[in-house]
Image 1 (cartoon, rainbow, N blue to C red):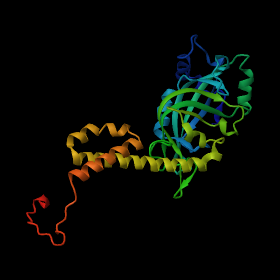
Image 2: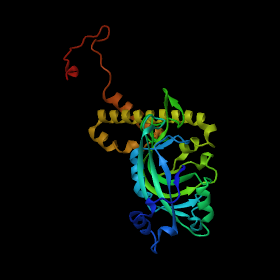
Image 3: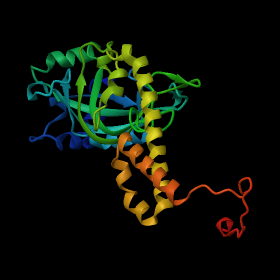
Image 4: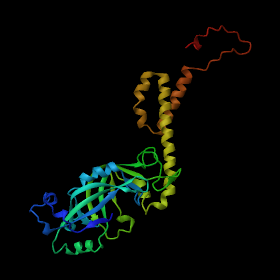
Length: 307
């Protein structure tokens, strides 16, 4: 994400701004001792990993990024801490739309750093436009498919990020901000890895790998396997329902006892149980005919056909 404003402004030295900055400082700082700038941390655009933050998630991240440090190349060692965010805001640009046709919305962070000798080169690089890109490290609770709304790569979703389905792009909607770790100056922003760094809890798994540059060659195979896995899940679901239906015909108590157990059974166990129920039902309810066989005379009572 690019730095959208750099340098000290009259506003940055205001009493309100200095109070926000000094809330993180052990010693009271003066405007002359600090350098302030703002960064565009993340937005609601679909990024190069085919993921996007929802507007609600941006609002949640707004609070989480206050106080977070700025580092270099996402190196979490204490020695590379360079700046700290003291204020954030979510901004909507009414004159700009994202690729989905929605109002462009982004999270802006206001950061400060000390005007020390060691920070002099970094300040000069920011002023000179050399350090223009940052990325963020954060955690979200869910990655939802834009096509079906289910968790990407899990459950009943077999869609692949970056693919088109009926003319609609599949991407992940990152929802439920859990934590913000840091924001970082990146060395090579043109590369895919220099984009927004996001962590999903739990991990992205295979779908995340296939959606990355390294995993893209396996996307077709993964799509086929995902489709077959979805068919298998539907078959198991139907097999469980049929097994419970047969149990209900045999004995209501048997059905109630098995209701929770069948969810833990695999295909082989379910098929064996279903076969056993089929045999018992065939014995308990043999087929009956309304018409007698040739040369047979029967007295028709009809009780077996009454409801």
